[in-house]
Image 1 (cartoon, helix red, strand yellow):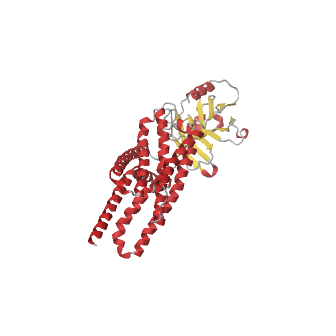
Image 2: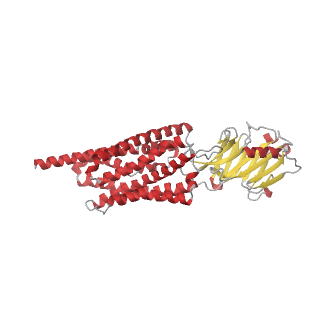
Image 3: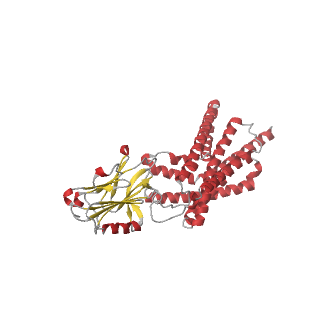
Length: 453
């Protein structure tokens, strides 16, 4: 943007007798002498031309209106309009379009009648527009002094700002979260992931020291999910430590993507295993069952990550923090939106649908048992609730919170998402301990019954 500022200064010093439209590469510029007799000054622009005459600009995309209050004070002064289109450099800016308006020798701010910038935008899918300006001091986009009006039926965004500078329309999440909430959510995630990591490591140690001899297949599946979560939580915690070290950041980005896919895959395997237990009960024998599950659980994510790296290695190479625009990558993660949508959101949606169906079957089965054995209804209530909560955790159902619209409760929804998912490892540890305790108690009761008999 510093180069643009120099160009703007050069244009302000350019001598011209008539309004002039310039086009060079991704830059469209317009020079105009202000005349207070004209009232408001309107500048229209498309990707190749700009003018104060709307009829000369077919299918205008941008319209800038300078209020009469401003025009009256800048008579015979050069007004410079610049529009830069650079989607790669400004990926979070709608169409990568930056719009600048300046007046020679004047710092314009605190206007009572705002400058109006109208921009036609394409469909923003799940995001919404936000009017911002570029702060050359902080090298960031900010929104102070600007308001946003979005006319969705016309795909039109109207920005009203009380100053002149370079403006843009950012695509932002519809759930605006304050900076304070972001900090709190970050702390919750870090603390929750640290607790999950600690207790999952303890669970794995207990498994190899005490529980492995039981030969329980379900427990082996649970431990595999726990290992996937150890990788996920560990690399998530490392993110802030290596975000400014490019080589380490690439490593974390690759492993974070792999461990997230592995976690989702193992939650799907949990659903499949539970489905087999419910439907086939005693006839669950499959040759090398756990080996086949492990090949899917660990092999499938590896294949996906390797293929992505072969097809476009920049997905992982272009990560880390960089200054100069609002699209900074502040975490070591995938840099491609398409890859995220397909391999993360799309993949999880399929798994979520399957696991949610499995959970419904489990709940129906538990209620069916209550009707068959009405006398045991009260005794089983607490156990059934714990079973449903435990299975909900193992199936990763809480990950679905991020996809649900919370409306005005969006921030509350994010708090629930961070709490439940960062503590998923702790919940699995508790589930493993309770299930092992229940199993031991059942075995003791059976031995006592056999001895009495």
